[in-house]
Length: 110
Image (tube, rainbow, N blue to C red; front, top):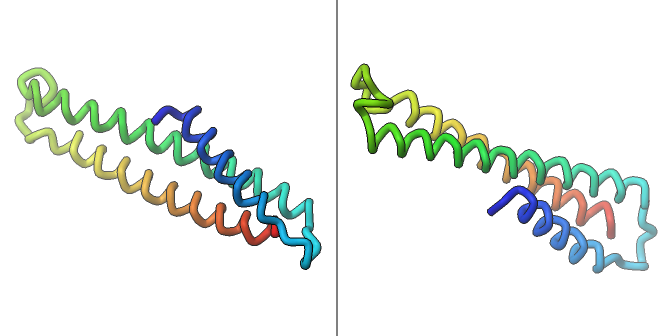
């Protein structure tokens, strides 16, 4: 999924959440606007983390497919594997942050 597609997806999700604004409780529009900015930031961070994971995966695949070229010390591509695992963990953290911001948005804009 491209970064732009991820941001569009998140924006649509935000619009759906905001469509359910309830008139019973007054909405603090300033707080809602900040929550929207926070979601946008978190979506950008998640998209960047996904791109970094994709780059790390590609590097690992290259190393595994051509160890003579990419792993001259014969470490079994351990550096690339570690970089990929760390990138996946960073992506998971970014998704958790995005989910938290979406929950906050839902609460702020209702």
